[in-house]
Length: 325
Image 1 (cartoon, one colour):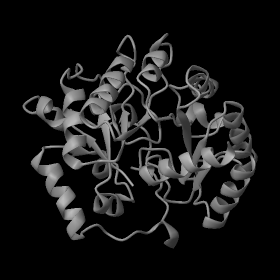
Image 2: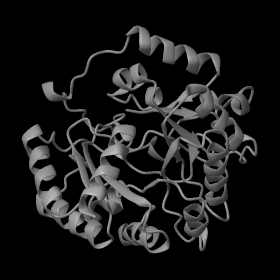
Image 3: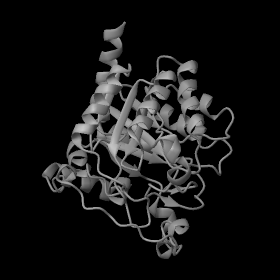
Image 4: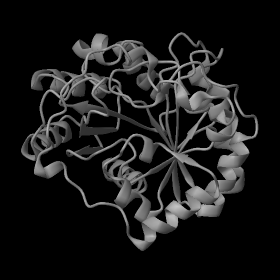
């Protein structure tokens, strides 16, 4: 499980009157979409355990903003109970406007040069054995934030050399040389989510390009075959089963090691509607098929998310690779 911290949010926004601005200005005039009632298999226990409360206390005392709370993650109770953490760097505002995402859209603030050190300090204080670093898209930056990712990885390595590092990156679209900078910093796991099947990109992920994302993941392996690669998708957006199976083949052609599949949950009535809730049996079928196609690891369930059980999954990835050598 993962707690997503955005350490670059509140302080710079205080006094700027930004609270009154819409979180998603590009969606404000869209008609409301109905929100389907969640089936029983989506329901989770409400957070509130002593361990959850302790994590919550640490977050509040350090004035951190969590995407877990903002996005209404269904796994927040289990996640925070285990004190697992994913840090979101480069601010809280994304330059893209994906139809599924609840992250703020707009013009981001300048990068915080001290952020890599702050993240490394937090990782050390929390005693994390495995950490996930993600970010918003930063199309406004010449390198898409690649050097900032690399600096963060290096800072964590220096402070916590035993901590394994997983990154969940944007696509660095039209940012020549950016991927090479990130890979040179040698994360243990490179994750880039396809999010959905190619036929849905125009409505679900209009700022991205499906085959660019496939090529990004393939290029990671070409640059450093020792890095584990990972990608995830959501289902319930109107995709067909045969499209999901073709996506699996596309990822395997890029030598991707790990696939995650989870149910899309609609953040607000302005976001893309849930077209249907995929049953646990269908998820199990996807997991079986993906395993047969050669992935080292597959996680497919209604509540699976990209950083779900990331530390445990890293251990499984290493064991699976060793078993094939």
